[in-house]
Image 1: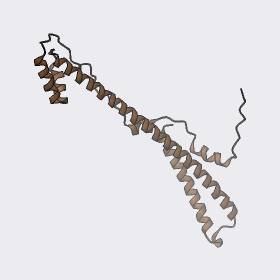
Image 2 (image 1 turned 90 degrees about the vertical axis):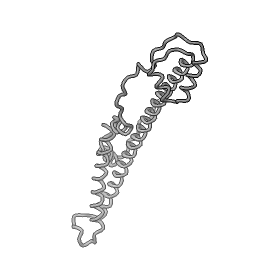
Image 3 (image 1 turned 60 degrees about the horizontal axis):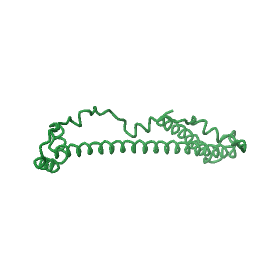
Image 4 (image 1 turned 30 degrees about the vertical axis):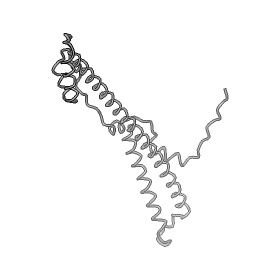
Length: 191
């Protein structure tokens, strides 16, 4: 089940429990004369307590799912940020390599010169002045940016977090677990 679907399902189930609770609370608050004879105030109070426990269980599960979504969101944003920083570092490395090549007096493609100028005109001018002082270098280089591929479409952090698959029980199973007494796990064997 995707996180988005789990959140919607749990929120809907929590709302159903809340509506049942409100209806019973309204019946309990009415004066004794209007209460049908088939209703017992003690039974209604017990039912309200059970509904409160179910609501709390479903709400706790929903908070856990939301926390998981927040973690996935943060991890995805960190990954995007790391990729962006890696690309920026790679770009800076290329720019500095173009600077080094131009400074040595080598022939550099116009595309690379344009990238250097776009990055920093002062750096470009310094490279050109260094090239004038250096002996003419007959070495000719290919462009560093020819191997670039077209950027691919990336999902946003929110989309990745919402579409992450999780294993969550059905909301009704969570609220039903409140009704049954907890089962003690068997003691672990010592190896």
